[in-house]
Length: 199
Image (cartoon, rainbow, N blue to C red; front, top):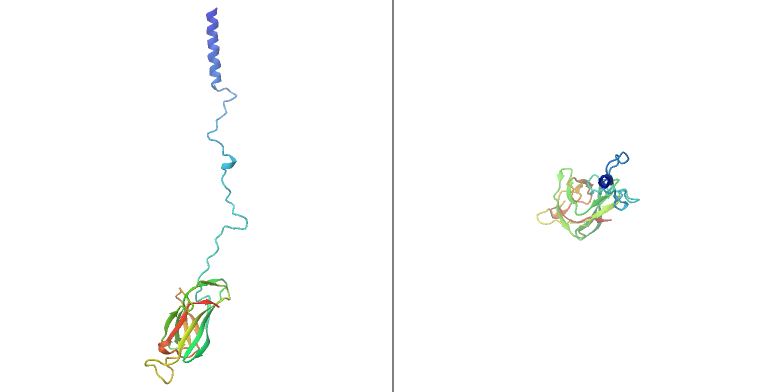
């Protein structure tokens, strides 16, 4: 009798151990364990929304002033002792701002074509970057002589008389045409020109 009770107790103990180790029953058969820890609120990805008032779009680049955006004129400023002074003035005639920095090309011309021109750059003032708003102006100083030199004729014009100039804006290749009504330029068409400055 005692042996039967011991054997029965062993069977009951083994059954209880198997049940405690997680034997599937109809009540827990559909349960699954998570494979990873759910993200906490502190590890959530940061918002990609841009700050208020900032669309995130880059501002459009301001283009260089070219011959399609500029209108030019040459205006006299002073004269004396065979010297002439003037300004080459450009105006931004476009609808958008543009940048200007440096020296203009400048070739005297008339109805027959190019007239002798020797352009000499002077740093008075030197190059400085600027932005011209629509309608904004910039100037370059000009200086030339009207006294014949070398083998230039003493009577009559020292050089063919120009009626216009082809001026190329800094870092561009296409010229704009400006009227020239200031007579011949002696010394082989020598003109001193400064860099552009705001005016």
